[in-house]
Image 1: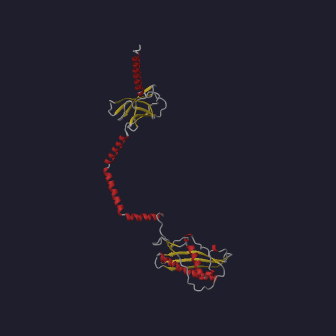
Image 2: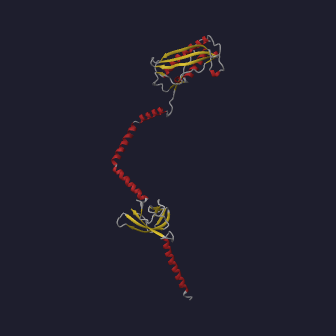
Length: 367
């Protein structure tokens, strides 16, 4: 008995090893477990590069079985038939989508199943048809796309040549007219208010100074409020009659709006006559004895009259009770040597100087 015992042990070990090998092979081909299995036929219309028997079968990304058979269709050389074995609990329906995926760095192919819209089992599932191009790898897809691009380019080579030639002609024209294009762009920027703002040329009125010795002086405190004027005269631009744009005046402005400019220069004129009794602005004093109220009627260049600067001012003197003591309309004009901004500013100064002297003399007489 003692000499036979080792042979029994060795035999049992060999038998166990054989059973383990068969169990491993069965497990390898039955990854869904030892439960019931269902076989389905899959049809690919095209190549299935790298797909092997034993390759995994995934359903919604979960491994449920493996490929058990692969073969070419005898009636169609482009078709590949495959047989898959999956766990019976896998919800394969007649509308289940079939494709081929490539996993990992080496691109190992697997059959991928994707659940359809049917929820209940619709009976025996017919042959599953894979999507067209399911076996196409990324490399093959890129090659096919490049072939299509090459085909399109080959079919349209002449129109493309003409288009490129037209573009060359267009760019040559742009290069020849760069200066003109720059001028157009600058003009558009000015029209739309863009770009760097244009530098304005500012002109001022000149107050008269040659009054000689002051005669009669003011007997009370006189104030000159800001003159009133229609909206058109509330501007710093030089105005024209008829109203339109004239060359050289687009970037020309007065030092202040016309009413404020007249107020400032009238006060300066009174100061040049008698600074000790000169009038002030209303805001600079409390209640004045008298006010010189000015309404601007005209302050423009009349082109129809031979380019002449025209000024028209309506003046009233009222006391602290609002009673009008005196009123008068002052008008004066001066021809322009040339229709240019400097000549216009000089003409306005001359016309204003004569009005200012008349208004001072009239005010002294009235008060």
